[in-house]
Amino acid sequence: MPSKVWSGYLKSIFSVMILLCSYIECFGSWEKLSDICKSSTFIT
Image 1: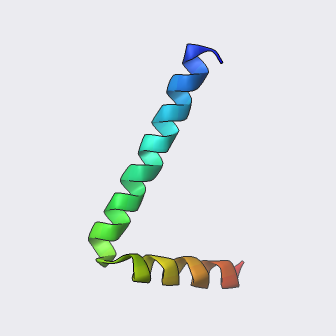
Image 2: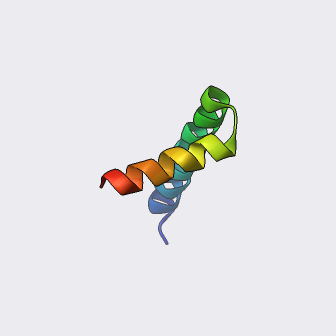
């Protein structure tokens, strides 16, 4: 795999992790996050 593709892949993983961390900080727990995920899947 080219290094450019690999670094882009790592950056996307980091951004997802940062999003998850900010969600956890905002809502305080994984349970609320999973509830949001469940409700969003019901909407779609």
